[in-house]
Amino acid sequence: METRISITKLEPEALKVMLGLDHYIASSSLTKTHRELIKIRASQVNGCAYCIDMHTKDARKAGETEQRIYALNAWRETPFFTEEEQVILALTEEVTLIQNHVSNETYAKAASLFDEHYLAQIMMAIININAWNRIGIATGMQPAL
Image (cartoon, rainbow, N blue to C red; front, side, top):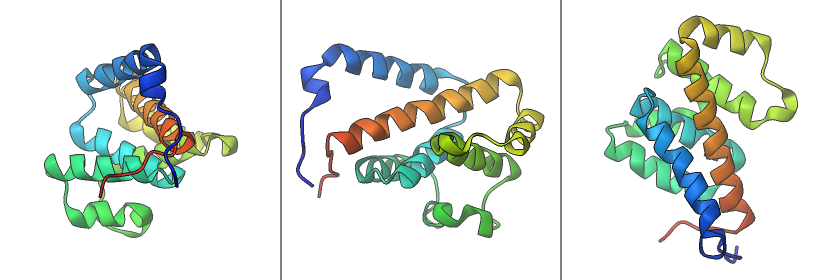
């Protein structure tokens, strides 16, 4: 795919707003592991090659294992993810595929495992990466070779 317009160059104020949300999420109490799992899984669901490339590299640098990264597409079928991570991945998929809504079951499970503030931070991280995915896909951003 050919790269299209650069929103970051054409609308730098929009970039500042997006980066502000990034900084908020990075300074929240979300663990690095939770943040990276959210970013990778949402990017996989959305098919954003640029973000998958970036966030799998970031996850590796943060100590995530190759095995868990490779298994994210089939996380339900593996023993590699904790109960909390499984709920975060389910919520990530349901928020990303929002036309199907977030199920009461997934929300209740998340609410039972996380306090309200952490759950709100999880949701904001999911919403944020979905916005970045849409920018990457709509503008044809490509990972570097």
